[in-house]
Image (cartoon, rainbow over all chains, first blue to last red):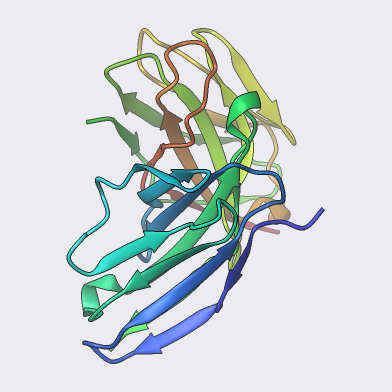
Amino acid sequence: EAGVTQSPRYAVLQEGQAVSFWCDPISGHDTLYWYQQPRDQGPQLLVYFRDEAVIDNSQLPSDRFSAVRPKGTNSTLKIQSAKQGDTATYLCASSFWATNTEVFFGKGTRLTVV
Amino acid sequence: GDSVTQTEGQVALSEEDFLTIHCNYSASGYPTLFWYVQYPGEGPQLLFRASRDKEKGSSRGFEATYDKGTTSFHLRKASVQESDSAVYYCALSDGGGTGANTGKLTFGHGTILRVHP
């Protein structure tokens, strides 16, 4: 079974540029999460969806970050006007809510903003 | 809000040494507790979890016991191997004591484990 797939694996931007990250969750998983992992820190939840609905985006910097999951499958996380402080690995994860199963993480996208 | 504290930032051991990584948590409810392991270039992988007081989780020789009284979930392994070298994260999820897992994980800062042959 394929795991959570993310692309690109790496991105390097100048401050002020925009970038999008793409995530394909495990087939059949209805819940999808985006986490931010700064270097040498644990992951921190940004937003999560159940199907296409946003359940919690309270930690998403709404002025520059946006996330969508229009058909309840793949998801895109976008950063407008990136800042050096956005440098981190962005992890996508998925799970099947109803059976309370494990949350599976992708390999992440490592973003560097210079 | 909820938080997880891992005391050790880095641990260096020799093969066959005993490992302890301390984890304490603060949560308003009755969380589910987890240990995750992360290898370079990979996402975190679940090692094991525990949902109730005194429940022991274990996997691959690692174990931890949920202690609600001391709000702790310390990771231990009797004899480490070089292949155990990785970053270990303690985490919690609001679960209400039922074992439910919202997937909203709160992670500690992580402990880098280096095991020398």
